[in-house]
Amino acid sequence: MRFKCLATGSTGNCYTLTNQAGQALLLDCGIRWKDIKRLLAYRIDNIVGCLVTHRHNDHSLSADEIIKSGIEVWKPYEVPGAVKTFGDFIAIPFKVPHDGIDCYGFYIKCDGQRLIYATDFEYLPFRFQKQRLNHMIIECNYTQDMLELSDAKTSHVLAGHACLDTVKRIVQVNTTDNLMNVILIHASALLDTEYTETEISEAAGSSVNVQTAVPGFELELKDTPF
Image (cartoon, rainbow, N blue to C red):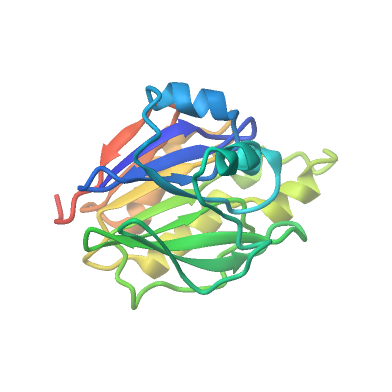
């Protein structure tokens, strides 16, 4: 599989997974549909579906337009379900806490690989050790020292986004010999990504590749360790 970041952060989130057969799955669609098409070089005939984590515009902005284009969009917060298939992709949703808003992460299987996509959460209420994840696409939004307790947005950040310490614990709990990549998404513009990657690398171990996604970032998700 290949991962690509089209947009990430508070202004909009959209990512793709493309499998060996060339099928593409959209992960969130928080930017304009015309921009998604442009960033994909107008190749949308291979898009087999779109997963939307929650209703906030920075994740769901173009969902209705995508549906009108004939592409299936799954919003578990509106249409519950235990599992759905999109081409060769299998997606299983799991609910995460996000400041009182229904929000879901996804456990995804394809090409013999297993990964989670999780963003906009205070913490993850589930462990994935038994799934022996190969990849984690996961939010790391801020560090505790970045918060201004007097800021009106602080309560939303604390209840709805993942801090570095939380992500470190999640990675530690879910790291197995199968884990190869941790891709950090939805980072605050003020986040020190070099420091964050170093901290996550220490939690995951030296054999795990840790990188922060920015628009245009692409990574081949290998099915064997580096």
